[in-house]
Image (cartoon, rainbow, N blue to C red; front, side, top):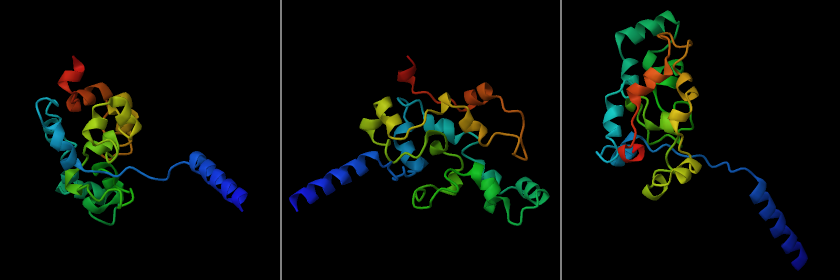
Length: 180
């Protein structure tokens, strides 16, 4: 009996170690990010985002122009309700709602669209250690232009040539102390 228990424990441990985790990072929403990323010390990153087109991406879907485009594309619902539009105009669209409960569609394309869902890297001790933050799900968007071209591509009905370097400069938001 004792031997059976020992074998069961060893098998369970091995399965635990080799089975990939099914846990997923949850989205925390721009309000959580802004708590730290709006200060001068952090380069007023929240203000940079808030004044960007990303912050108003959902609002553009509520315009007459968006409705005109949706109608021309043959969409059966308003642009602000169409999955084809929301995929690029809202953070976490199409992701399990349990993981995106903190995200407001009105916030458009917010931090976690580029940086990954923040539940596991949001704490100050983790954020102060870039390697820990990356291990906990932080994406360094600057290192991967393909993140941008998931939406900024010829599939978009309003596509204009996407010039990554120019676009990056419009949204670049470095931490001042980290760049010195």
